[in-house]
Image 1: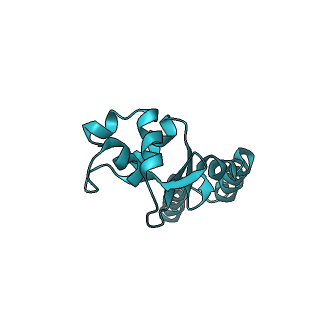
Image 2: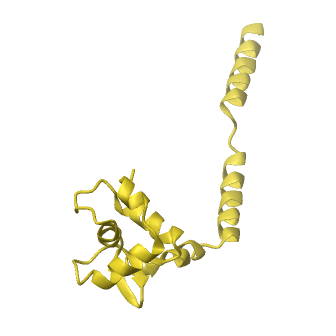
Length: 125
């Protein structure tokens, strides 16, 4: 859960912090603000004025940035593009192919019923 100061952030706080924030180590999660790619969590922590050991994690920082409409990236790829890479019809087709593959195998109930019939026939003879 983000701290109360992080939860109270505004878009203006984040853009002001982006102007103050200078180079930092490479990050997986980044946001594009005013043409600069900045690390998501340090940006949010700077905007809130909290120390680096604040309990806010990167995923929470990314959610905050997305909510304010900033372009968020993971390892340099636009997050919205990552979801668009796999088309829904491809997933549906995969699910249908898997359903068809396992239809021919009998269920455990059918196996048990068959075994019961075989045993019954063997005992009646």
